Image 1 (cartoon, helix red, strand yellow):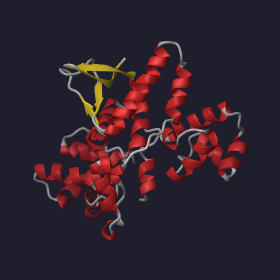
Image 2 (tube, one colour):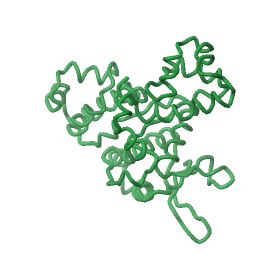
Image 3 (tube, one colour):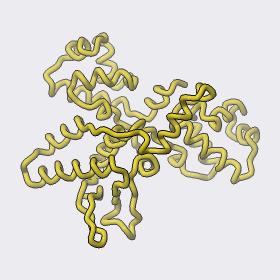
Length: 285
């Protein structure tokens, strides 16, 4: 399974299609105009817009350029339940410099504070725009447009776990690797299996699959489909969402995932005081 295909499995083609349609309409473009700008057939644009096909990551760039938005804003993830939202938060916290405060520490049911320079700048920019909306100097529509265009420079080395995977993935022996999500699952799955004292072969038999297929998950060469992931979770007695590892690719993509989550969960940036220090946090509105 190709890495782009693995990444696309985490996206929601219908939400992406609806957004492309909305942005195209707002830009005054017909489907043919967008197709011409992308250098593809009109049928391809139609397939994207009705959610029949999820655009490959590299194909999102010409779409974004034609519509005047950041490519990352078109990567809309599938968060179908609260477990997947928490899995996404776990990835954001572990890979991109966000801390999820406990209920005793938090100002509300959800409270996220930035810990990396990139996220500190994002939260600051976001708070500034939100305060303009609250004061009536900017509309909600303009804020959403700001989110769609948001960009910020970053250094990949500031995000060591993701960077370590990129370095590992470039080695010749990593040619069969199916991507960051599969790599993270390959670290988690053997640990859970061994905790229960189950051999690979026995576990494959419990799942009704070949040992080679199961081994490919522990080697990071494949990801199980949703049905098999749920079967694995039942056998290991863990939530299926604990075996979901979102791949946000880079800090900018993580920022746009935060925009998506905040709009879903009604999180807003606000000032957060700790002792004599004030910082920006993302909390339930």
